[in-house]
Length: 112
Length: 197
Image 1 (spheres, rainbow over the protein chains, first blue to last red):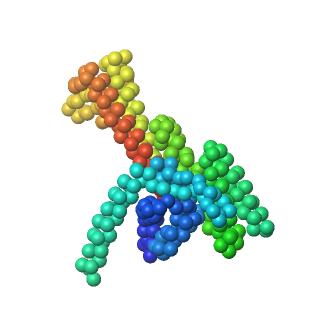
Image 2: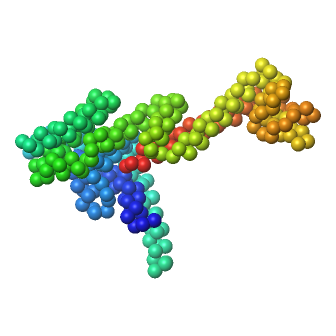
Image 3: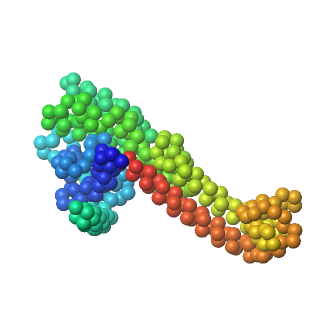
């Protein structure tokens, strides 16, 4: 497996966790969330993937949304927030991610 | 002005491509996309750049449609509906053909169990579980042809072991296989939706 396809698999798997974790504090609208995820440099996420992902998470009841008129913005924005279910899911995902990362780190340390 | 026209052409194609969605969902997606275009353009991006980041409107719309179809199928709880959605996804190249084939075989097994239970009181001599010297047969036999799950052979000389117990046993087995297949089908549909995050 070459590094490019491996990297894309890795990034794909983390997108859901990243999006949910980014909503743990304040609610955010799509573009804001996308830029926050993009700024990490750790994920491959574009307009074409973030909105369908948010749409799916909302259908599954993990996030909710509210349209808001914001001063200075020409268009209303759709703000997303975590639901109780989404909060529980992101907690479980974070714990799992921690276990996973520590395990792999330990293996890499051992090998080098 | 040029920019606005470009965005509205994209949005028009998007709305058209989303026509199978409920109107409310469709308008929300279009409104959200329009706001995104406007904000990026205000930041200095060109329409073409923004459009490229969304991808072709038809491909972009397909992601929403797949989400929608699978969610509807899952929440309907209907096996036929879920199976139809799975088959459709196979047709469009998402998901594994063999996984669906396996599921079809499991459903057929459940159906066979039901048929065995129904036929036993109607033709008691032809339905059963036989064991003999070189025979192990579970299922339905006709007078000349022997078939079912197990070895093919002659029931003459073999002994039928279950009697009418085959009815409840077969019903329970069928129900277990059916419920198991349903839960596998659900998991399959959920995983398919995630294949294109």
